[in-house]
Length: 331
Image (tube, rainbow, N blue to C red):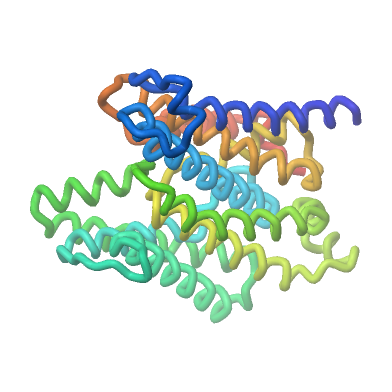
């Protein structure tokens, strides 16, 4: 018990340390005056406070949201390979962004860029389709949600390919760049837009830790212990969908974070979601921040999309889980 508690605090503190140190990394050295004065003028102050710090904040919130969503879906579906994108939210957001780019639109909505607004609308469209299809066919069961999510994801992906094929070279490249996933921010606006979704969603999922413990064992056992499985399923589905929609609308579909982070945290702090949920949230934020730091410093001044880094790490990790790695156990 003591070992798990120590591991829990190690995960939290290590994740915070990575996040606090990440803005210091980069080809441009940052002097002490720029660090101590947020309003400092000059190149160093601009780089640190208007580019690096907002980017780190955005990456931490995005990683936390994806990790929380992946953890909840792995417990809900009792599937170690489940991700926040399982129900088609990412493909819906990508379709919205593809339509925006392919049609050559240009607008802002309530302070959001048109591409972000279109992505969020597409994600909500996917959520609506999945919810409607699963209720229509199976009464909103776990299996029905999975099948509806796969169907919607494949359908939206085919529409994205059609839009890409019919677009010119520049638009096609912009769509592809969006599908890779990356964190390209130059102000605190995206982080502030993402904050309420990440904060509220994380609090809700942590508060459901007891229910997730029981659901990860089985719905029958959860029901026998007094859990309203149908209500919890709806809450988890709705909260995770909103969190992921917000992340994908701002950063694109950054893959594998929602699968890897919960498993890594589980190996360190154990299966109990009362400890695992906050650990996975912090670990996911620190993990994506570290990946984004590598993406912008490995071959500086050229940046690699962070989605490429997470996919390079996620592919082998996925195979390890598939071949029976110990992190694949969720109950």
